[in-house]
Length: 259
Image 1: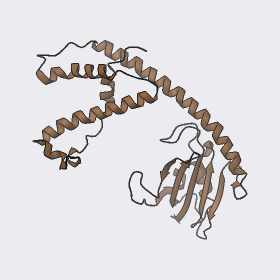
Image 2: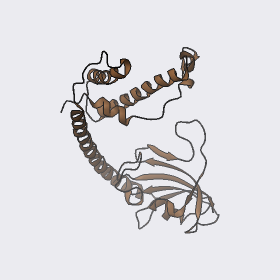
Image 3: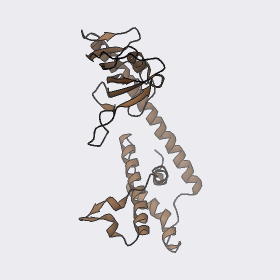
Image 4: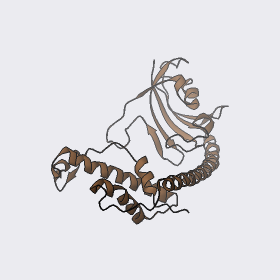
């Protein structure tokens, strides 16, 4: 692997996010804002903290990819970069890399990381296909599961007696989506990370994934079904947020209203 100690600059650039509200952070029983003499002081601290946290997240991600970088050299590169700002260059040390060298090493490293990510994505996609195929076969063998020609599998959890769904209409639903390993990736019943209940969602029938669209056309208001979707009826061969490529999806879908 090429010398990569200058990666800190890439991390600092790509990690720019919204500045945290330090006034809400408590320290030693006092609000963080009381530690600083002015908003500008608080901003200066927040600016450094935000980028430092971004750098830590970047390092942890790289470690997950099997890449270990020398944090001492990263710290050294960072200090070389900011010393000139701090004291007007009076005690600044010369950078160990030129601007062109920085650009080249970061470019090369970007390509290296992208190749690793692509390889991992291919492996994960293949794993999802293998495990998903087994899951679909086993699920289809359950006596209460209906399998349609498209590959859609559904189980009726509760029967309703309300109106059906119009092709051009909208629906109000509650739903919960999970992967076959039980990982929940989306839900209207709750808001992730918050101890509060979610609200039903409204969707146009033309704006949902194929598996939902097919199932909703068969449902009536009041119905609650469990859907098991092969990748072709879900997000296909592309990763979608927390959903891996070629993932089989399991949804609990409750039709509340037709508009």
